[in-house]
Length: 353
Image (cartoon, rainbow, N blue to C red; front, side, top):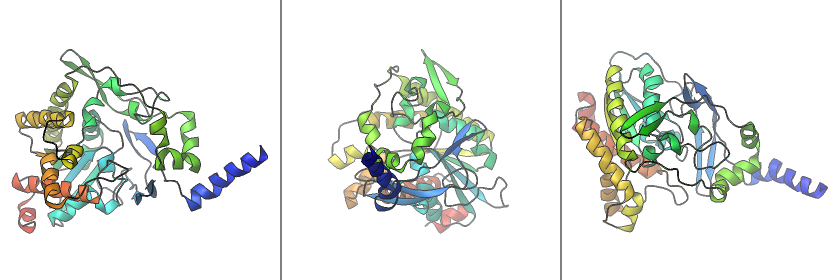
């Protein structure tokens, strides 16, 4: 027993801290009904031997290269807010390589500032909640929603697993706004206050756990939850509920709305042409956005065209999140959308040519 304890202590105190370091995990908090990060943190994300990136949380509780978001705007400033999940949170790339930072760089206009609001695991319903409770307070002129394919199904209240049952959903998933469907009636289910299990902070302090569970994702292979029972037309009903309310809420806080959706990169890499379940979600979102007159960019077409030209992947081998190239191509496509639809100031349209 003594030898076992010494060995465990060696791995915890030396191996997984200095030799094979575990990733650092940003701590979460719950303010004004919104899950965000504890302000002013920084650390290093590590995934297998492929990803080693620095991350930083600003004074407002959001991952960003901007140290602090200001609620007031300097006269002449045009402010863009990008809302999303772990893609916008961006732990897999350096802070300046995120789609939001690259969008600001691509626009080449010092009067434009891009703030990002991303939290891992957030679904489409939570984007609406974030816009209402957090983003509007910063008086954006334009709101860009970055959709990924699990945003639809995970907006449904049934997709929230009970803590400790499975690791498909983060433990803070019940602190997101969710939707309940009863026929064609959609009801919002308010978020629960963030109460993490007693063991969560203990595990977060253990380098051995962080190395095995997060760097090598052992927990995702060991425990999987069964798929929840969700109505067949839930994806369409959720999009038809959320997207119009995103547009209305953006309008009420003096902003325009634009939407981007990820592509099915597995279809692109394989060269298949048949429709996929992911691309059907693209079709649903595009149709709803068109009816709402919301500018929209389908990144599947963008990624497909770029892959045919350059043959370079947009994600990591060990992580389906966008790599630096994925963020850059997405940022360029969003920039083209904003310029083509006149959603950015004329100075940006000139300087970006």
